[in-house]
Image (cartoon, rainbow, N blue to C red):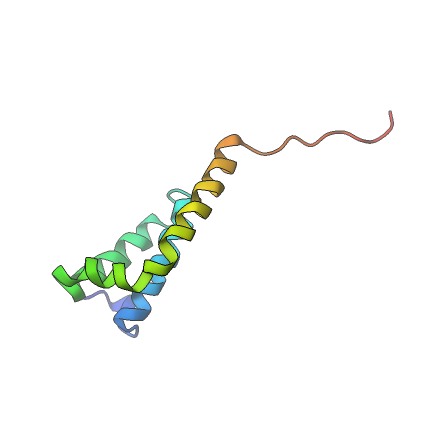
Amino acid sequence: MPENAFAGLSTEELADVWYALARADTRHPGGFSRLVNRAFAELNDRMGGQLAPFLEERFREYRLADSKEDAEANGKSAAGPTPVRDTYPA
């Protein structure tokens, strides 16, 4: 059943929204999961078996750069924040 929230978006626009949200969810795990899943379910309802080739073609140019950037961001967040040094005189 189509999701009313996405009714005004074309399939291409919905794919763009899904991709951007999925990237944000990669950087902030769980922060956008529910909406990512809803958008993906709507895409799957619209495209069926053609979804994977559609997404591959649409986002091919971004995937490698994004995966490197996301890996770096995840590595930084896993390391924790950089400690603040007290540089004020005693």
